[in-house]
Amino acid sequence: MGLIRLSVKVGLAATAVYYLKEEGVWKDSDISLKALDKLKQTSEPYVQQIKAQVPLELPKLPETEEMHQLVGNYWNKGVLASFDFLQNLPGHVTVWTEKGVDMVLQNEDIKKFIEDLSNSSKESVKNK
Image (cartoon, rainbow, N blue to C red):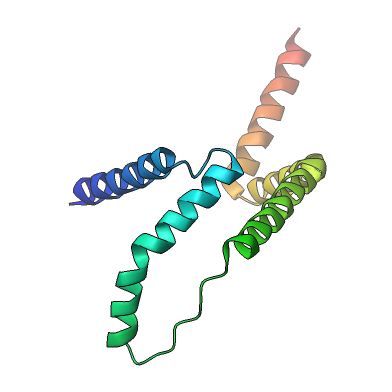
C-alpha cells in the first residue's frame, strides 16, 4: 500500500513539474508572466463556478505586475537566506558536532567502549 501511495505522489509531482516546464514557468520572466496570464484566463470560468457555489468571498488574485514584484521580492529573500545559512554553516556544524559528541558520550555503553578501548591501547603500549 505504501509503495502505491509513493508511486502516485511521485507521478503527480513529475507530471506537475513536466507541465510547468512545458508552459515556460522556469524560463525567462516574460514567458513566465505569459504563462501566468494563460493560467488566469483558463482558470477564470472554474473560479467563477466555485464563487457561485461557495458562500465565502474569495480574495482577488494579484495583477501580473504585482505578482512579478512579489515573486522577485520573495526570490531575493530566499537567495539572501540561503547565503546567510551558507555563511554561518561552519559555526552551525561546530555546534551540531559538539552537541552530537556530548549526546553520544552520555550513552553508558559508548562510555564503557571508549574506556575499554583506551585501556587496551595503554596495555599494548606497556607491552612493547
